[in-house]
Amino acid sequence: MAKAAEERPSAVDRMAIAARLKAAYPSFVAGIDGNDVVFTDGTRLPFDDGKDKTFEEWQREPDIEDMFRLSYPRGAPAAPPERDFDPGRARNADFFKKIYGDCRKPGFMKSLTTIAWLPGKTTQKLEVTTINGVADRLKAVSAELDALPSRFDAFLVPSAGAFICRRIAGTDQRSAHGYGIAVDLALKRSHYWRWDNGGGSENAPSYRNDTPPEVVDIFEKHGFIWGGRWFHYDTMHFEYRPEFLEPTK
Ligand SMILES: [Zn+2]
Figure 1 (tube, rainbow, N blue to C red):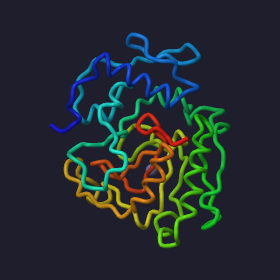
Figure 2 (figure 1 turned 90 degrees about the horizontal axis):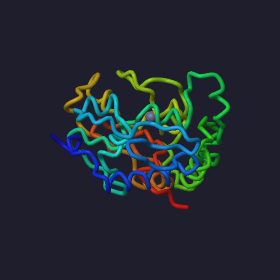
Figure 3 (figure 1 turned 60 degrees about the vertical axis):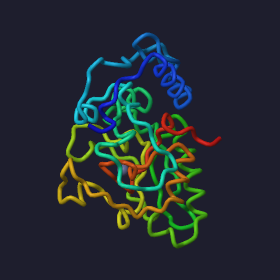
Figure 4 (figure 1 turned 90 degrees about the vertical axis):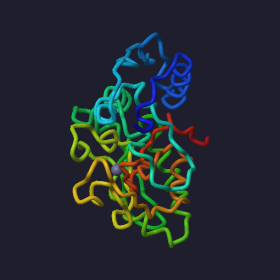
């Protein structure tokens, strides 16, 4: 099997993961104590459920430890990823709900704000969360993308959307878009494994990408991972996952 079958982290890795979580979610994560992730409000979530998971289980029901199984190859040239190499695609729902809230619950919408998307190129507005500094990070991304020459425009505008309370196609899992942490670029120049395989073979998507590296670099610099680095690729998709990327201050 590919990287998804690697062993679970040792105690040393656990400390490294605690440091990454604290740096990525500074107002929320206090640390790891025993087998619990401890939050600044004193609540806890289990870190490791102790299960050895297949790729499908890893993707469907990751614990917090599982989210770190694969490291994210920041800055690498776009290339067909190894089998089941989907770094960041596993999201522990309890963790993300704890940080960003549950979009099905009353009151969730007050965590969202509207930002102008590339105001030099379009009048489009996007809805994203203000929690954990996400809206400010996306504004910084937008300002840098806005400064790119017009040959990039077809990739960037119109955006295919940001916040939407939905599940991932073909699954029961909440999409990153449901937490208000994700943005999709222009549909026209994008490739998604489910479309490119006529409804999708999980096992043999044939990698395609047109998204320019300049665009990917700007997002990664601000803490957003790119779905174009996944075996199950989604080249228009970016989501704020600073536990994989230390954002530039
Ligand atoms: Zn997306």
